Image (cartoon, helix red, strand yellow):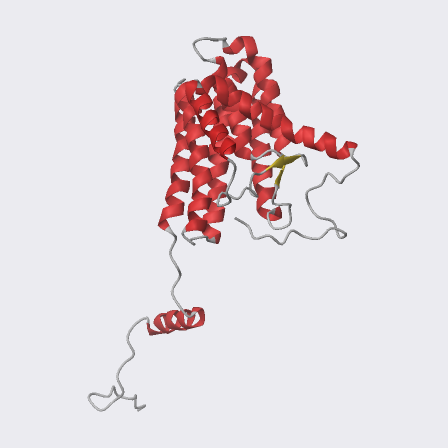
Length: 288
């Protein structure tokens, strides 16, 4: 009769706990990494989340036909988007997660939100041509953000390659604010084709190679003449006097400035591309 081995009682080796192999695997993976995964920085990502909320709020207000709230939400998102990167650099809390999160937030606040706002305001009555123009703007914002993420290390830091998405959003929603001002009060149906042209112009300019000044080489720690401070105060007073009438013309001038630089460089025979070629040295100045 075959004899089966009996279970050892007290003198045997201790029985391995359940799931021990999974635990050993987890310990080995942790040893390879050297440390646990780092969390995310709260302060800069809080500004990015605020910009994302403003974009979502603009979409909701546009669906409720509250275009004044929607437009102001996009402008508030612009302010928050300009602060998150500077806060991250000042507090030394830059991260790859923050860069990717900022791009996703920009796509909502400056891509989807302005496209939906202008579509609900005036492009809906144009039928297929209306939503095609809105889609051209939205797709242009997505392509512009993707190109910025891939070319950010090789372009000339003094210029943007194409119209930046916050400026394009301001060009679109600023037009709505300008036309809905009580002193102007022009119906959306009277300017639907103007809205169509602005949406298509902004979308195509975002994916163009036209250089737009980035203001990144401005040194705020450098002393300036007194007249510069006076002009800054005057500019703030001008904007505060009537924002709905002042903001849009400012962004129109900025949207046309890139084409003026493009024409001047071509007229002087200078290279127009802001991406250095093999014969041009790369810009070694640190990113701000």
